[in-house]
Length: 239
Image (cartoon, rainbow, N blue to C red; front, side):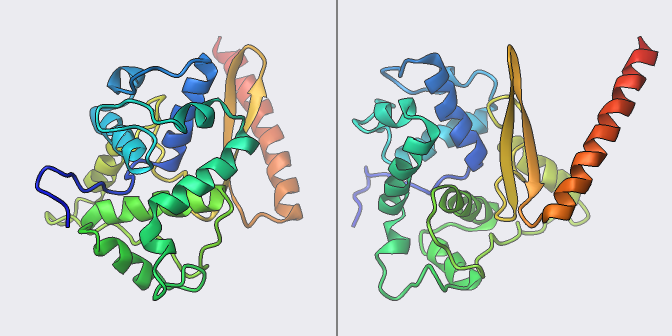
């Protein structure tokens, strides 16, 4: 039983894309700070900064005062392919309540069973939605098999009624990534993400449904070509 002074760590509520972006930002700087704090995330909102630090603590990457643990530096500096198996191990250890319960089968569980596992930690409301969404995105990224029946539960309706837009805005504010962009829909289990690097410029981020077949990709390619041609013409006329 935890003592009164011991804090119970909650699974990450940030978006998985924001987590990855933060690790990449440190890798791009080619130096891991001796303390991880909010000053390393100047473009993020206050809730995003706090959520990132909480996520790093839950995953065992930093201690309570932000000091990086032994595995943090090699994890940050590793290239993407080398980083994934490291993070797979970290996720399996951090979410031991999912992997070490003989009564719970992650490979065949229902959404209800998964939700109950997180509820047992005292998590509820929109936090429940975010914590499960992070885990599902991480599992997909690191090759951890999860039952196809498991989905993140929808966020609870607003008590005020008729304020779906306000609720969505609140979720968006919480899930700002490090560039100030909304990332709450980027971690769904039904999308694929990739980046197209541009020399001397920021990469182009592309998010598409993972159900696209060959004909869909061909149609998408043609549509993008037509759109870019039309957009360039519009910009030329505007100038």
